[in-house]
Image (cartoon, rainbow, N blue to C red):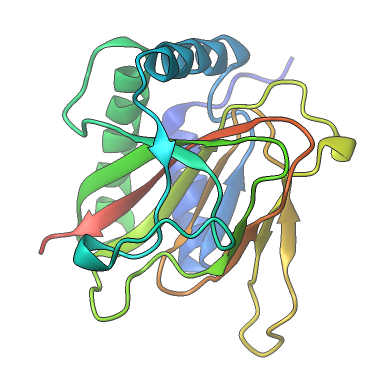
Length: 208
């Protein structure tokens, strides 16, 4: 029987992939029960009214533009360490330290939110790093969708080749999968899904 993959081994695989080609898909970063626990926490937050329509831009330029982005988000307390979400954020802190050790990325903090895409919702092609503000360094997307099927749609298109602007990798949002990529390098978009699509999306940032 193949022994289970340790976090240390996963972190090394992620670091190697981020060094080249700059992006990584890690299946089963979380187990099925861990995914279900975060989904339950997300449902509780939804019941409390913690989700709101996502905006585009930052600060005073933040606008809700449903034609560009039509998901609903709940921003997370980065200091949270309780419950399933807190346990995941603690694991990301371990990843941050490992990547700083192996790649000297200077990652200082993490900000993130739960993102719920109702059927038909999407997020048009974009870059995660804001123009003129180079703090977001590494994007980390955890998918929370058990039993996702090809007919459900909702794939991530990651544009990986600057020499071929229309070339992309297609990544299905299977529960437990973690996608990481350099925020300033890769444009990406979320395709519409036939059922609700849930993720915990965030960014490791450099010190401001």
